[in-house]
Image (cartoon, rainbow, N blue to C red; front, side, top):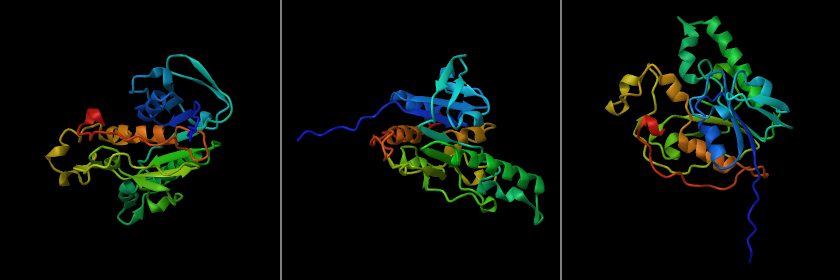
Length: 251
């Protein structure tokens, strides 16, 4: 019996709030038209794929984007897939302790959190058939919609714990590809970093927040492999990401 293989065409992907280009590059490596966008310059080494500036004018598609190399690219219709990593500073449960000063609500921080929530919802409600919005576990104060799933780096070949929530629209849950034993928490916040051992030396730097926000390579590759399709299911199949990663450069 002849087995007919599912045809996969080039997918147009916008990866919002991503300067590292981890996710963008993972989609590019398997032939898709992916662009990263961030207010910062890209650190992933591909300015020809990076849009520097405000991402909101581009999230609904039907636009012309200019990448850092000066090239213009026309996007006809909507993006096939939008993946967003909006800032979590004011929304995360870990930062909720800063909302209160002596049992009094910090109005300035609360207002910044409301602005962050509105920014977050712009992506979740964008005119795009398939959407993933990524953030840490959110504070209940801001009443964000319920997330679809929680993933961990150690489910994708990286021996660290870092709970990450995914809000998905018309996408299947991301499946683990290489489950390994976690050795500790990735770039723990300053409030409890003293609880972690010597294996974390070098992670507690002035760039901790930036390092903590980068997408792990195994997760980026899983997104590209499983969601890099325009079929109804949204997944092209699974490819195991082999090799536990032990250092910052291999993240």
